[in-house]
Image (tube, rainbow, N blue to C red; front, side, top):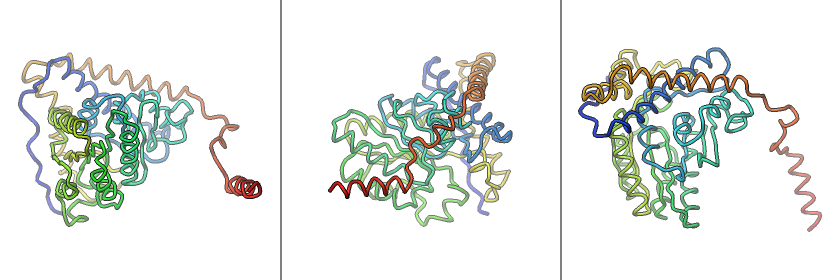
Length: 347
């Protein structure tokens, strides 16, 4: 197994005022505590099905979502809890959805991988690798044709760049000059295969640039760099009305999913990457410049944990969907055949 070269942890002063820096730290803590609690609940079989945790990657969602607006469209992968939370879906609705309860954002029918909220312009939660890319391209096309002033941010992993949907979407987005911010969360292993073992071209920006669009790569463990890069990229998409590709070099500290035996990397590698953890490195930088003290950090952490426990209580007390409603929005083949027969008979 080839040993990965791990960059030095993010360091240096944080160029933000205290209030903004504290709010960014608070969001990363909210994500981390929600994900940790979800892992516990999965072990207790309160959450069923699949569960893909975002622990270690908090800086990406936090930095990018803060650079966007509530009217922008978000399309994400099955590792989407953080993106949903920071784009307006309440933690209550997210937790209830993971519990399969009807107060969840998808009425309990989607679960962890299919968070959806049209009102907040959050369009999934896609379970299929690369499935969000053509959806994002279509949303951007719809906005352009209707002259709606917004961009579509599409999150996907580096594994999706081996899919045909990636190349088709990149081509059409550039060909039609669509306002899409392509956000590649490169955590190095896709589902469980190192990038160099599956791709002949491991420079992700080179792949994206082949379609003629602007590209940039940034340290996805550094929330300051993520925010600045996302802000500039989003501004370019809005002003020029054309797509931009951003690679966020990040790392997940937990397995791909709760079923992953994690045989493709070592514990030593994971521990080494944890020294670059986005929460503790950002906290250390703030403390070094006297913008944060331990009591303030503990208060933010306590608030995050209180929000999580309130969401868990909400999910536990939420109702299951009534049996009478289980067939709602479900169309059987016989119904479709009957409908088709009626149409043909009328013709």
